[in-house]
Image (tube, rainbow, N blue to C red; front, side, top):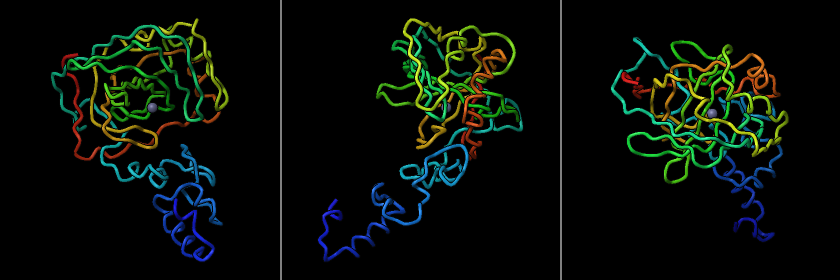
Length: 277
Ligand SMILES: [Zn+2]
């Protein structure tokens, strides 16, 4: 912060340094001094507008470069058969130890997120991952055999370091009735910043999942800035049916459709399909 303490004798040098830094690591207050709004003053969004940076611009936002430069990004196009790059294998099964949670919803303007009470985990290969929250995208972020589903739910888990490291994705379709979704989708906060907290409402987390737990798995990233890589994805092949009213409750919220990042190049990554669910 020495630049801020520059004496009057060196204001031009300071300004030049601030502008030079603007494209890389300048603090937000330096950008404010420029006359024209720079790209990195925008807030990330799913649409590119004068005020918001859509997915193609995320990589130019400060701290989010990996959204553009990363080679292991999510979502991706998935397939269960050739010519999709998928290999069937006997994978260790996910063991869901999900319990109940009270209702803790927040509309953050990008999705509605349900934070969950402690105690729900998924075990894979002897390691336990703690469920932190789940949230929704519309339409689906991953595609499966060339199709996007109307919605996709992400169940975000943390490893022993407390950081998100494993996401279970569930496709949602209209039709059928999964009562476990009702307390969530009938209480969605409509406005950005809106919250709904009701510890007395119970959500049975295990019932948010399909009975068939066949997974496709690959190494990817967060699908929103900062697009952090090193995330293990488990995408459940079988969708879950929810009512038209429940689906409508989410997709009709302001700014919630579309909330899917376009699919990213798979590159040399392998997708594995569990041959023995
Ligand atoms: Zn997500």
